[in-house]
Image (cartoon, rainbow, N blue to C red; front, top):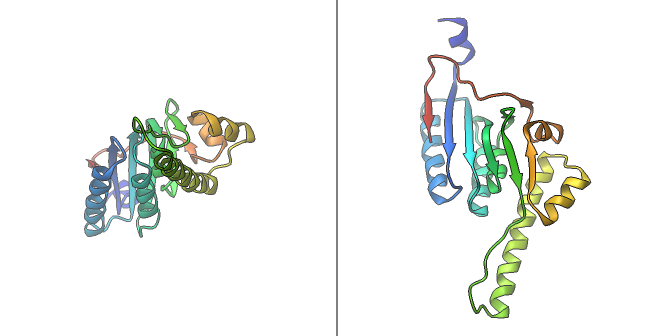
Length: 186
């Protein structure tokens, strides 16, 4: 067995793309079932997503971050909105030099003709989602006060270098599976 094979025993490489939704949750659950069956100890996951549903992203964050498998996440293009919370499930996190991140507060459209009580329920739900995502963000990253002010009212965009400065990533580095190792799409 070569030194490289020994170094990567128990490691596997994956790509995960698309909207964060119930379909992605099911795909990740299925992939992790295969990982446990295959006795994977470290899963390297390249994420490409512009976001989706808050509850699905938080579910994936909680699930992946508590597995007995070390999760390593990568951003090679764009990780935005609730996908940033999913990305934070990585015990180690990396981004390509040209990758971008974007975080923002939750938003929703009110149905035409909505009554005040229905609007209040929508607002309360958005505030609850914002509190959940902000708790996770604050537990992983050290945004500046200026960043938090931007996040309060607008989209906060971060380059890979800026993500490194605030602790969103460990290093500016590419997703580079070793030659001869399979990459599986989740």
